[in-house]
Length: 76
Image 1: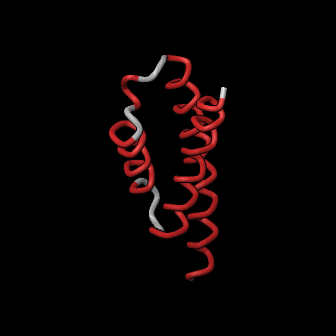
Image 2: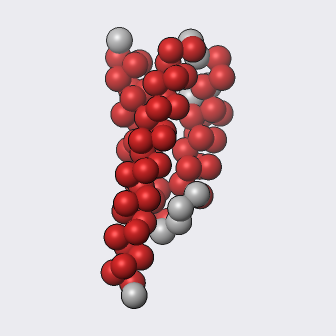
Image 3: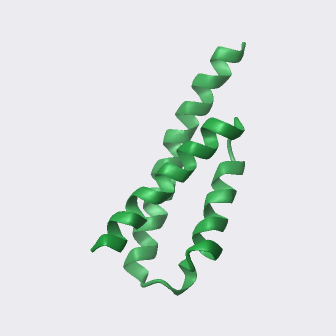
């Protein structure tokens, strides 16, 4: 059960952190996917866990876009 909570929250936190630090749209997504696949052995996890992590990554990407747009407005 704990791994499902971790799979749901970890990608969102990674994407929000990288979006805040890197000021980019797609670089945080690529870094997060690489960490999930290679760092956490994502390809060898059960399918429901992969689906939850994928949905969480998509949600984190859209939340990160909000941060990116807000930062872009502050720079101008």
